[in-house]
Structures are given as C-alpha cells and as structure tokens.
Image (cartoon, rainbow, N blue to C red; front, side, top):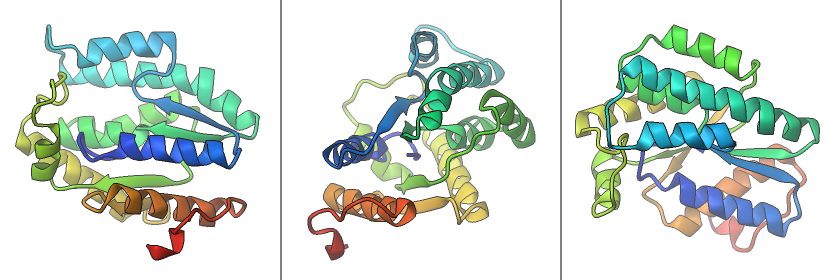
Length: 208
C-alpha cells in the first residue's frame, strides 16, 4: 500500500486486514518504518521533530528498519505461505528519498535489493491523491518530521510515484484516492481476488 501522506492508504490497509480476517486468509501485516522493536525505535528517530536529519541519514535509517522487518517478519511469513500486507515498502524510499530528496535512484535500488534479500512486492496499490487534497486531509493533525515537508516536496514525491507506476504497470495498480472509502476498498479486494484466485466476492463488489 503506497501513496503520499494523507492519501488514505493506512485506512485502506485496515479495511484489507479486516477482509482477510473475515475470509480466514493467513496474513502478516507490517508498517514501515517499524514492525520490529528496532524498527519502531528507528521510526521514532525518523518522525521526531526535535532535530533534523540529513537526506542520506534519513535514507539509511529507512533501509535499516527495512532490513530488520524483512528478515524478522516478511521472509518467515512468506515461508509459511502467508499473504504479506505492507503499509509502505521499497517504492516509498524511491519516491520520498529518491524523487523527493533528489538522492541517486540507482543507488537506492541497489541498497533496497540488498536489505530486502531481493524481494519485491507482487502487487502494489498506489493511492493517488492531489497534493492539495492530501494537505487538506492532514490539516489540524499534529505533523511529524516527514509531514512538515512543503508542497513542492510532496509534488515531487507524487510525480515519483506516478513514474514508478508508469514503469511497472504490471505490478502497480492505481487507485483513485478521491473516491469514497468503501469504493476504494471494494476495488482493492476485487484486484487482490483476481490476483490470488481463491478469495470470495465481497458484498456489493460488482458495483465498482
């Protein structure tokens, strides 16, 4: 599940988790950064507002958290035959630190490949939302260090996500994050059901 801050992907991740639970589909859910004790500690460093971080420090901290969650949670879950649902993964680093911060994309891809042991999502839902609307959704909510970036930064991040989707249309599924929450949830389930081939239809799914 990918997208800029305020796009609603975390809400959709919760809906997907509930649907998987109802259908008794074995799954593991992770969020990035986080998902492990070390990862949660790194998350605190990345999102705090007490001090700044250089772009390279920020990048390497995200990679460290990803290495932990890959080895401790993702690989064991896949080996057990579970579906793994990730609230952010490698595309976030390309979009935020690559396109957003201007760090070298090929270097980011190489480090990502190392820390994930070569794993890549089979299916990615990109919840696309104009930067202005995302900012409106976040208005009034206490902003963390990443959310305090300006409009132009988020515009670069969004453009980065769209470029990733353009380059990998077979993996990245675009979701209109302006649509009703329920509509998005049905669409996500429909796409996942088509991909996995063994999930039941959800109520009103055919209305999308």
